[in-house]
Each structure stands twice: as structure tokens, then as C-alpha cells.
Length: 285
Image (spheres, rainbow, N blue to C red):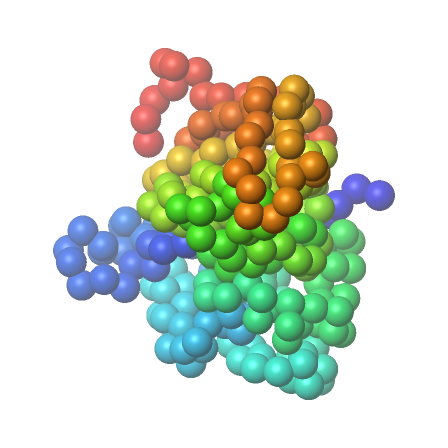
């Protein structure tokens, strides 16, 4: 069955247009990732549900998103302040998830999303609607990382090419072919994503820089959006991978890990593992 929904994982710190510096005026917001989220969701009239469950300050985060989407003309923005599994079964929240054009997961701790929403009625509705409806499911940082089936939960960036240094658990399983990491460049997470794909060499690793994201259509093809870079690890042709034979704490090594460095406008077919980059003479926007 062809997937009808769209996923938009974002690497974190996406511009919300709420800074006071003059560089962050409305025209800048209109070219931002959040503007693309709105367009993919059907425009300013879209029903948008923000889920700040991953955050330690959900009220403030929800208010920030209401303000940010409001600057893009959106007035039908709702916050689902889910703080426990029981609230994932609230009728008013379930009804909103059933009708929303866009679900936006905030940053924070991705494990909290799984703990409080995983396998609940809301999660099951989202999985079903993603397959059957033209819904947009977006998420920043933790909200992006939870989209995969094998989800990174943490790990020291400095130590993370020692076996066992990276935490992994089951995620929301919207896009099982990928393992997604966020804040990838600024926080030096090359090693921990490499360990993750070493553990699951049939999957693709996606490292998202801040203010950078993907628009994933039909579960098969993505386009890079935003101001930063995306690193894609394809382990399908590994010639050496000692992950399985090592004891926890021992240093790992890989060879022939295929790596792509992508930027705004580049496209990749997840199913066929084929890359299409912008031509060198393409105009910069």
C-alpha cells in the first residue's frame, strides 16, 4: 500500500521567527522550515496540533509554537499537553489527532514520547493516518529522532564509537528504514550514528544539522530543506564491521561506510538508495 502522509524531521533549533533581532523579521520566517511545514499541511488554514511531550517546559514550548505558527498566518493551532499515558487516551486529544492536518512534535527527550504516547490510541491513529491520509507529521530534535523504528536514546558523542556507548530502543516506527540523529554537526554525533548503523546495517543513518530537515514523501523519497547539511550513512556495502564480535566497551571499526553530504534541495530515494543533487549551475535561493 502506498503511503499518503508526509514526514518532516528537523535537526533542532529551527528558526521560529521569535527572536528580537531585526534579521528575524517575517520575511525571513516565510522562507523557513516552519513555513514549509505549513505549506505541506495545506496552508494557513490547516489544523495544527503541537505535542510538547518531550520537553521539560511543555507550556512554554507550546506557547512558542503558537506564536511562531501565528506569524505565518495560522490561527488553528492547538497544544496537546500530554504528560502521561492516560492523557494519550483523552477523547478531546484523540478527536484532534483524528482531524489535524499537521502534528508537530517538539524537542526534548525522545524517550518521553515513547513512554507517554507509544502504543497508545493516539500513536495507533497516527500510524494509520500516516498510511492512509495526506497528514503531515513533523518533529524537531527529539520529535525527529522518534520517527524511526530503531531510535537513538542517547550516548556520549566523545565515546560513542565504543560498543554499547549509544542507547537504542524502539521508536514510533513511522519510517523504519532510517535511524535519525539531530543536532548532528554542532554536537559532534558522527560516532554515535555510525555505531547505530553498525548495529543495524540494513538501515540508513540520517544526521541532521540544526535548522535543517527532510520532507519525506510516501515513505520513499526525501528532499533536504533548511540552512545546514545532512549526513547520510549507507552501510549496505560495508566490508568490515566488528560490532557483533566485540564486548561492550571495546572500540569499534567500520570500512566502506558510504557517506553522502547533502544540502538544501538535494533528493534521495530511500527505497532505491539513489541520490539526486542540485546541478552545479542551479541558482542559489
